[in-house]
Length: 317
Image 1 (tube, rainbow, N blue to C red):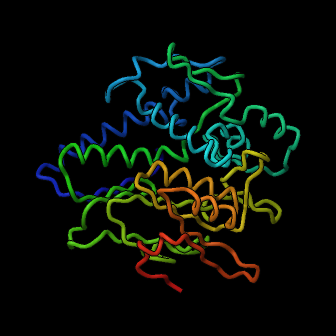
Image 2 (cartoon, one colour):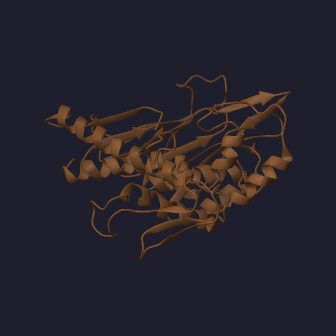
Protein backbone atom coordinates (compact mmCIF):
# COMPACT_ATOMS: atom_id res chain seq x y z
CA UNK A 1 0.00 0.00 0.00
CA UNK A 2 3.04 2.24 -0.14
CA UNK A 3 2.95 3.05 3.55
CA UNK A 4 3.76 1.66 7.01
CA UNK A 5 1.76 -0.31 9.53
CA UNK A 6 1.94 -0.43 13.30
CA UNK A 7 0.35 -3.13 15.43
CA UNK A 8 0.19 -3.53 19.18
CA UNK A 9 -1.23 -6.80 20.46
CA UNK A 10 -0.43 -9.34 23.17
CA UNK A 11 0.65 -12.64 21.62
CA UNK A 12 2.48 -15.72 22.82
CA UNK A 13 4.00 -16.11 19.35
CA UNK A 14 4.41 -12.65 17.78
CA UNK A 15 6.74 -13.88 15.03
CA UNK A 16 4.15 -16.30 13.67
CA UNK A 17 1.42 -13.72 14.03
CA UNK A 18 3.45 -11.19 12.05
CA UNK A 19 3.87 -13.74 9.25
CA UNK A 20 0.09 -14.17 9.13
CA UNK A 21 -0.42 -10.41 8.98
CA UNK A 22 2.18 -9.96 6.26
CA UNK A 23 0.68 -12.75 4.17
CA UNK A 24 -2.78 -11.23 4.57
CA UNK A 25 -1.53 -7.82 3.39
CA UNK A 26 0.22 -9.44 0.43
CA UNK A 27 -3.07 -11.07 -0.57
CA UNK A 28 -4.95 -7.77 -0.27
CA UNK A 29 -2.34 -5.95 -2.34
CA UNK A 30 -2.56 -8.64 -5.01
CA UNK A 31 -6.20 -7.73 -5.54
CA UNK A 32 -6.57 -3.97 -4.96
CA UNK A 33 -3.15 -2.30 -5.29
CA UNK A 34 -3.11 -0.07 -8.40
CA UNK A 35 0.69 0.19 -8.18
CA UNK A 36 1.09 -3.54 -8.91
CA UNK A 37 0.99 -4.58 -12.57
CA UNK A 38 -0.11 -8.08 -11.56
CA UNK A 39 -2.97 -7.07 -9.25
CA UNK A 40 -6.56 -7.85 -10.16
CA UNK A 41 -7.56 -4.18 -10.12
CA UNK A 42 -4.73 -3.20 -12.47
CA UNK A 43 -5.68 -5.96 -14.90
CA UNK A 44 -9.29 -4.77 -14.78
CA UNK A 45 -8.22 -1.17 -15.36
CA UNK A 46 -6.16 -2.19 -18.41
CA UNK A 47 -8.88 -4.39 -19.86
CA UNK A 48 -11.10 -3.31 -22.74
CA UNK A 49 -14.48 -4.41 -21.42
CA UNK A 50 -13.88 -5.87 -17.97
CA UNK A 51 -12.93 -9.15 -16.32
CA UNK A 52 -14.48 -12.26 -14.86
CA UNK A 53 -13.97 -12.78 -11.14
CA UNK A 54 -12.86 -16.22 -10.02
CA UNK A 55 -14.91 -18.63 -7.94
CA UNK A 56 -18.36 -18.29 -6.41
CA UNK A 57 -19.81 -15.54 -4.24
CA UNK A 58 -19.85 -17.70 -1.14
CA UNK A 59 -17.54 -18.44 1.76
CA UNK A 60 -14.86 -16.51 3.62
CA UNK A 61 -12.15 -17.88 1.35
CA UNK A 62 -13.79 -17.05 -1.97
CA UNK A 63 -11.39 -15.83 -4.68
CA UNK A 64 -11.25 -12.07 -5.20
CA UNK A 65 -12.96 -11.55 -1.84
CA UNK A 66 -10.68 -8.63 -0.96
CA UNK A 67 -11.54 -6.88 -4.22
CA UNK A 68 -15.24 -7.58 -3.74
CA UNK A 69 -15.32 -6.27 -0.18
CA UNK A 70 -13.78 -3.00 -1.38
CA UNK A 71 -16.04 -2.86 -4.43
CA UNK A 72 -19.32 -3.39 -2.59
CA UNK A 73 -18.52 -0.96 0.22
CA UNK A 74 -17.20 1.65 -2.21
CA UNK A 75 -20.36 1.46 -4.27
CA UNK A 76 -22.52 1.82 -1.16
CA UNK A 77 -20.67 4.92 0.05
CA UNK A 78 -20.66 6.34 -3.48
CA UNK A 79 -24.46 6.22 -3.34
CA UNK A 80 -24.67 7.55 0.22
CA UNK A 81 -22.43 10.53 -0.56
CA UNK A 82 -24.09 11.21 -3.92
CA UNK A 83 -20.80 10.68 -5.73
CA UNK A 84 -18.49 12.72 -3.50
CA UNK A 85 -16.72 9.43 -2.84
CA UNK A 86 -16.01 7.91 -6.24
CA UNK A 87 -13.46 5.11 -6.86
CA UNK A 88 -13.62 5.66 -10.65
CA UNK A 89 -11.73 8.96 -10.27
CA UNK A 90 -8.37 7.33 -11.14
CA UNK A 91 -8.03 8.84 -14.65
CA UNK A 92 -8.27 12.31 -13.12
CA UNK A 93 -5.95 11.44 -10.23
CA UNK A 94 -3.42 10.26 -12.81
CA UNK A 95 -3.80 13.41 -14.88
CA UNK A 96 -3.10 15.62 -11.86
CA UNK A 97 -0.01 13.58 -11.00
CA UNK A 98 -1.11 11.87 -7.79
CA UNK A 99 -1.14 8.25 -9.03
CA UNK A 100 1.68 5.93 -10.14
CA UNK A 101 3.58 8.56 -12.10
CA UNK A 102 4.18 11.57 -9.88
CA UNK A 103 4.25 14.86 -11.75
CA UNK A 104 3.10 18.46 -11.55
CA UNK A 105 0.60 19.99 -13.95
CA UNK A 106 2.08 23.35 -14.92
CA UNK A 107 -0.82 24.36 -17.17
CA UNK A 108 -4.39 23.10 -16.83
CA UNK A 109 -5.77 21.47 -19.98
CA UNK A 110 -9.53 21.85 -19.56
CA UNK A 111 -10.25 19.98 -22.79
CA UNK A 112 -8.28 16.98 -21.52
CA UNK A 113 -10.01 17.14 -18.12
CA UNK A 114 -13.44 17.22 -19.79
CA UNK A 115 -12.50 14.24 -21.96
CA UNK A 116 -11.50 12.23 -18.89
CA UNK A 117 -14.71 13.04 -17.05
CA UNK A 118 -16.61 10.74 -19.43
CA UNK A 119 -14.99 7.82 -17.59
CA UNK A 120 -16.02 8.98 -14.11
CA UNK A 121 -18.95 7.53 -12.17
CA UNK A 122 -19.78 4.17 -10.64
CA UNK A 123 -22.59 3.83 -13.17
CA UNK A 124 -19.78 3.05 -15.64
CA UNK A 125 -19.01 -0.21 -13.77
CA UNK A 126 -21.37 -3.11 -13.10
CA UNK A 127 -21.10 -6.63 -11.73
CA UNK A 128 -23.21 -9.50 -13.03
CA UNK A 129 -23.31 -11.88 -10.08
CA UNK A 130 -24.68 -14.76 -12.16
CA UNK A 131 -21.74 -14.73 -14.57
CA UNK A 132 -19.27 -13.05 -12.15
CA UNK A 133 -18.30 -10.62 -14.93
CA UNK A 134 -17.25 -7.14 -13.86
CA UNK A 135 -17.88 -4.90 -16.85
CA UNK A 136 -17.17 -1.30 -17.77
CA UNK A 137 -18.68 0.96 -20.38
CA UNK A 138 -15.40 2.03 -21.99
CA UNK A 139 -11.71 0.99 -21.92
CA UNK A 140 -10.75 4.19 -20.07
CA UNK A 141 -12.93 3.43 -17.04
CA UNK A 142 -10.75 2.52 -14.04
CA UNK A 143 -11.14 1.75 -10.35
CA UNK A 144 -9.00 3.05 -7.50
CA UNK A 145 -9.66 1.92 -3.93
CA UNK A 146 -6.84 4.00 -2.42
CA UNK A 147 -9.33 5.92 -0.29
CA UNK A 148 -10.81 2.78 1.24
CA UNK A 149 -8.26 -0.05 0.91
CA UNK A 150 -6.10 1.03 3.86
CA UNK A 151 -9.21 1.01 6.03
CA UNK A 152 -10.08 -2.42 4.67
CA UNK A 153 -6.59 -3.65 5.48
CA UNK A 154 -7.02 -2.44 9.06
CA UNK A 155 -10.35 -4.25 9.35
CA UNK A 156 -8.93 -7.45 7.85
CA UNK A 157 -6.12 -7.53 10.41
CA UNK A 158 -8.63 -6.90 13.21
CA UNK A 159 -10.70 -9.84 11.98
CA UNK A 160 -7.54 -11.98 11.98
CA UNK A 161 -6.89 -10.99 15.60
CA UNK A 162 -10.50 -11.70 16.53
CA UNK A 163 -10.23 -15.19 15.04
CA UNK A 164 -7.20 -15.71 17.25
CA UNK A 165 -9.24 -14.67 20.33
CA UNK A 166 -7.25 -11.50 20.94
CA UNK A 167 -9.20 -8.99 23.00
CA UNK A 168 -6.86 -6.00 23.22
CA UNK A 169 -5.16 -4.54 20.17
CA UNK A 170 -4.23 -1.45 18.17
CA UNK A 171 -4.03 -1.64 14.37
CA UNK A 172 -2.81 1.25 12.22
CA UNK A 173 -2.04 1.41 8.49
CA UNK A 174 -0.93 4.73 7.05
CA UNK A 175 -2.63 6.67 9.83
CA UNK A 176 -5.96 4.81 9.74
CA UNK A 177 -6.64 3.19 13.10
CA UNK A 178 -8.91 0.65 14.76
CA UNK A 179 -8.66 -0.60 18.32
CA UNK A 180 -10.24 -3.11 20.65
CA UNK A 181 -10.26 -3.37 24.42
CA UNK A 182 -7.55 -1.60 26.37
CA UNK A 183 -3.95 -0.53 25.93
CA UNK A 184 -1.11 -2.18 27.92
CA UNK A 185 -1.74 0.52 30.57
CA UNK A 186 -5.24 -0.90 31.11
CA UNK A 187 -6.74 2.29 29.68
CA UNK A 188 -8.54 3.21 26.46
CA UNK A 189 -6.20 3.62 23.51
CA UNK A 190 -5.18 7.28 23.09
CA UNK A 191 -4.98 8.58 19.50
CA UNK A 192 -3.82 12.00 18.32
CA UNK A 193 -5.47 14.11 15.61
CA UNK A 194 -2.66 15.92 13.82
CA UNK A 195 -2.41 19.68 13.39
CA UNK A 196 -3.19 20.20 9.67
CA UNK A 197 -0.34 22.50 8.72
CA UNK A 198 2.38 21.85 6.18
CA UNK A 199 5.15 22.88 8.59
CA UNK A 200 3.74 20.97 11.57
CA UNK A 201 5.75 18.11 13.00
CA UNK A 202 4.15 14.66 13.05
CA UNK A 203 3.95 15.00 16.83
CA UNK A 204 1.99 18.30 16.68
CA UNK A 205 -1.57 17.49 17.69
CA UNK A 206 -4.83 19.41 17.53
CA UNK A 207 -6.72 16.95 19.72
CA UNK A 208 -6.43 13.67 21.59
CA UNK A 209 -9.17 11.08 21.56
CA UNK A 210 -9.83 7.81 23.35
CA UNK A 211 -10.67 4.92 21.11
CA UNK A 212 -11.92 1.50 22.17
CA UNK A 213 -13.74 -0.90 19.85
CA UNK A 214 -13.89 1.83 17.20
CA UNK A 215 -12.03 3.03 14.11
CA UNK A 216 -10.70 6.47 13.23
CA UNK A 217 -9.59 7.66 9.80
CA UNK A 218 -8.39 11.12 8.81
CA UNK A 219 -7.95 12.83 5.47
CA UNK A 220 -6.34 16.14 4.54
CA UNK A 221 -4.64 18.00 1.71
CA UNK A 222 -2.04 19.79 3.79
CA UNK A 223 0.80 17.32 3.11
CA UNK A 224 0.05 15.78 -0.30
CA UNK A 225 -0.10 18.73 -2.70
CA UNK A 226 2.04 20.82 -5.01
CA UNK A 227 2.02 24.51 -5.93
CA UNK A 228 2.37 26.09 -9.38
CA UNK A 229 2.33 29.86 -9.87
CA UNK A 230 0.84 30.36 -6.43
CA UNK A 231 -1.98 27.86 -7.06
CA UNK A 232 -2.17 24.84 -4.76
CA UNK A 233 -3.26 21.48 -6.19
CA UNK A 234 -4.21 18.88 -3.59
CA UNK A 235 -4.58 15.13 -4.06
CA UNK A 236 -8.33 15.15 -3.34
CA UNK A 237 -10.00 15.35 -6.75
CA UNK A 238 -13.63 16.44 -7.08
CA UNK A 239 -15.28 13.80 -9.31
CA UNK A 240 -17.94 16.30 -10.40
CA UNK A 241 -15.56 18.95 -11.76
CA UNK A 242 -12.40 16.96 -12.41
CA UNK A 243 -10.37 19.52 -10.46
CA UNK A 244 -8.37 19.25 -7.22
CA UNK A 245 -10.65 20.35 -4.40
CA UNK A 246 -9.09 22.73 -1.90
CA UNK A 247 -12.05 23.42 0.38
CA UNK A 248 -12.11 25.17 3.74
CA UNK A 249 -11.62 21.77 5.42
CA UNK A 250 -8.00 21.24 6.44
CA UNK A 251 -8.65 17.76 7.79
CA UNK A 252 -11.60 15.45 8.35
CA UNK A 253 -11.43 12.76 11.04
CA UNK A 254 -14.23 10.20 10.99
CA UNK A 255 -15.17 7.73 13.73
CA UNK A 256 -16.95 4.49 12.79
CA UNK A 257 -17.20 0.89 13.95
CA UNK A 258 -15.12 -0.27 10.97
CA UNK A 259 -12.18 1.46 9.32
CA UNK A 260 -13.37 1.02 5.74
CA UNK A 261 -16.35 3.24 6.43
CA UNK A 262 -14.30 5.83 8.30
CA UNK A 263 -11.67 5.90 5.55
CA UNK A 264 -14.13 6.45 2.71
CA UNK A 265 -16.21 9.08 4.49
CA UNK A 266 -13.09 11.05 5.44
CA UNK A 267 -12.22 11.34 1.74
CA UNK A 268 -15.78 12.29 0.76
CA UNK A 269 -15.81 15.03 3.39
CA UNK A 270 -12.67 16.62 1.95
CA UNK A 271 -14.52 17.10 -1.34
CA UNK A 272 -17.61 18.64 0.24
CA UNK A 273 -16.44 21.50 2.46
CA UNK A 274 -16.99 21.81 6.19
CA UNK A 275 -20.69 22.70 6.35
CA UNK A 276 -21.84 20.06 3.85
CA UNK A 277 -19.50 17.46 5.36
CA UNK A 278 -20.77 18.18 8.86
CA UNK A 279 -24.38 17.75 7.72
CA UNK A 280 -23.57 14.50 5.90
CA UNK A 281 -21.93 12.94 8.94
CA UNK A 282 -24.55 14.31 11.34
CA UNK A 283 -27.31 12.62 9.34
CA UNK A 284 -25.45 9.34 8.77
CA UNK A 285 -25.95 6.73 11.46
CA UNK A 286 -22.93 4.96 12.91
CA UNK A 287 -20.39 7.68 12.13
CA UNK A 288 -19.14 10.83 13.85
CA UNK A 289 -16.86 13.57 12.56
CA UNK A 290 -14.21 16.01 13.82
CA UNK A 291 -13.40 18.73 11.28
CA UNK A 292 -10.57 21.26 11.32
CA UNK A 293 -11.11 24.09 8.88
CA UNK A 294 -9.61 27.40 7.86
CA UNK A 295 -11.24 30.56 9.13
CA UNK A 296 -11.34 33.69 6.96
CA UNK A 297 -8.80 35.38 9.25
CA UNK A 298 -6.29 32.58 8.66
CA UNK A 299 -6.81 30.81 11.98
CA UNK A 300 -8.01 27.24 12.43
CA UNK A 301 -11.54 26.44 13.49
CA UNK A 302 -12.99 23.18 14.77
CA UNK A 303 -16.43 21.70 14.27
CA UNK A 304 -17.60 18.26 15.31
CA UNK A 305 -20.76 16.22 15.57
CA UNK A 306 -22.41 15.72 18.94
CA UNK A 307 -21.36 12.08 19.30
CA UNK A 308 -17.69 13.02 19.00
CA UNK A 309 -17.68 14.32 22.57
CA UNK A 310 -17.70 10.72 23.78
CA UNK A 311 -14.22 10.29 22.26
CA UNK A 312 -12.58 13.63 22.99
CA UNK A 313 -10.01 13.74 25.76
CA UNK A 314 -8.40 17.09 25.07
CA UNK A 315 -8.34 19.82 22.46
CA UNK A 316 -5.00 21.53 22.05
CA UNK A 317 -5.10 25.27 21.39
